Length: 165
Image (tube, rainbow, N blue to C red):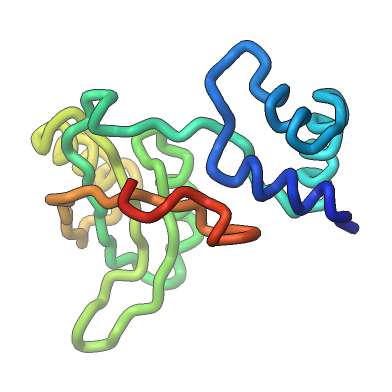
């Protein structure tokens, strides 16, 4: 069960924490609790499934990863779990998920995302995934513009930074 402090903690951390020696100190001060309690609460929220993960998100372009590719794969339904699991395990794949097809219009049912140094690097890595999994029917869709990403779930959308910043 969550209380008001948990809710406020999630609002304060939903857009990330500072890259500093004591990243939870300012959150603790704003909540008027100790740093230890902040960490304990986040840990508990993770254990009960409210927080799925707490991690670092890099800016691919600033990390010199200029080719962002979504690869759509047409995988036989009886192999989707096997191929999806293999692709999700690949260190090259940052996202991997299944989608419904649109029969006769869009037959791709498995989607992966890769961030690579350039298009040639991406195409090599995709070809290696294809060979490793036997999934040969695919299309590589390169992004042309990156929009600001937001976390998928927000406690209070109005509490976060303004769009476009």
